[in-house]
Length: 284
Image (tube, rainbow, N blue to C red; front, side, top):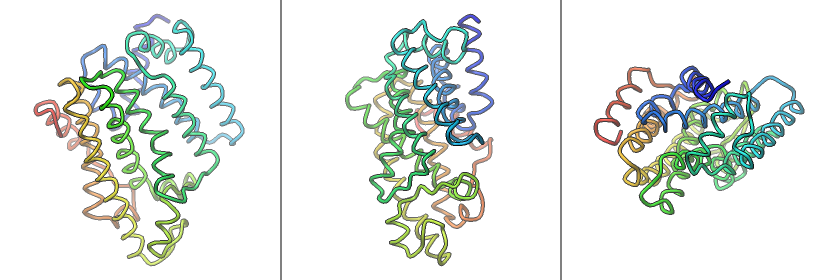
């Protein structure tokens, strides 16, 4: 398999699997778009292990195999031949200063999911969000580049936290009922008079969702300070992805009870309009 075929496969994975992410990376110039698709494809591979139906021990072995693959690619970019995702990732790491250890952090976060980790405090939850989403922000920044990299890195991390908090609120029912996972902090369930099984007065659960959504909005406010530090196309890409999730959060804030009844989402047309606005204005 040659390099073009490897990238084509990563872009195919991104188009078919990245329901929100793909709207942003379409706005990048081709070399950066291809590199971002390689990042998405390896992140998707990690997530699929964690969210799959295999027994936990098989999942652990799968994550360890990915750790070994990532170490090999980081040590020798010629590693991974024959695997399109690793081949494309290795090439992207040669072309851009991608912080490869951040991919190991993503695996660390996935491993926490396997153990059914509960988060006693909001600070503990933020630590998890930094592993599974802040890491992706920092990886992406390696491809985007920045006029002020030292300032940009913690902002990219913060924006990742904002997106992950939104994901957690959107998927709160599915995570509990299908995956057996509860991410919201134990201390906050206690604060509002309910418990991690999400039982209690409906108005208490709604108040809890409002409280966590307001926290996520604060993380967006901070993380979006990243945008002026990026070039126009990278800024548009980031603004599109963040804008889609921010609108989703606005929908949750407007009707917090909705996420306690069903999974909230945005229609494709609205996502496309956010992406178009990001391209035209550099913000969403």
